[in-house]
Length: 114
Length: 112
Image (tube, rainbow over all chains, first blue to last red; front, side, top):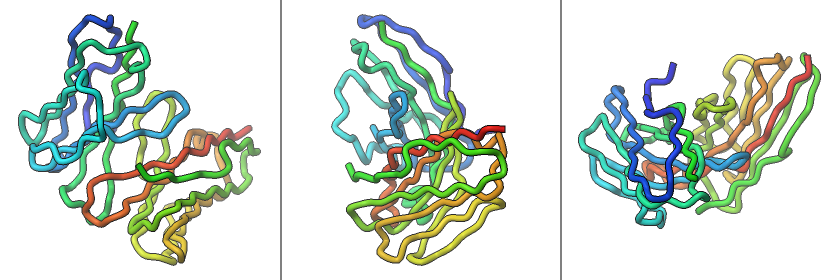
C-alpha cells in the first residue's frame, strides 16, 4: 500500500466548478509534488513544494492553484478548468534536497472536466 | 523540460522470456530511476542508480547506469504475468534538484 494518500480517487466537474484535490503523507518528507499524467503519456511535473514553500512552478496555468498547509498535506485547487485538463493527477513526496531522487507516489486522482 | 526517450514503446512477450528496454537522454543525469505503473495507479519505484557504470539488481530486475550518464537499461528475466504494466525511466539532472523527468514509457504485455 502506498504511504501517499490522495482523495478523491475520481472527480468529475464542470468548467465553472471549484474543486480541490488532496494529498497526505506521513513519512516525514518535506518535499511534495503535483504531477499531471495524460493517457499513455509520462507524468509531467506541475509544482514542487520544499518545506511548505513553493519551489518549482512549471508554468502551470493559474486555474490550478497549489497549497501546502503543513508538512503532511498538499492540495490542488481547481477552478474554471477546461476539458483538456482531464487527466490523472499524481501527488508524490520525497526527502527535501533528495540525494536519491526517489519519489513516492500516491495512486492518483482521475479528473474529468465536462 | 528534459527529453528522455524510451525504447521500445511497447512489447508483447511470452511468459518466461527475458525483457530489455532502454532510455536515452540528450542531457547528463546524476541519478537514473526505473518506475513501474499499473493501470489506474501511481508509479512505483523499482530500481535507483547513482553512479555511472553502476549495475543494480532487484530480484528479477537488473538496471544499469550508462557510462556516458545519458542512458540507462532495464532487464527483466523470466517474465511473469504480473510484470504487465508501463515502465518509466526517470532522471534527476542535479543531485538535490527535487525535480525528476520521466521517459516516454515502455508498455509491457506478457502472454501466459
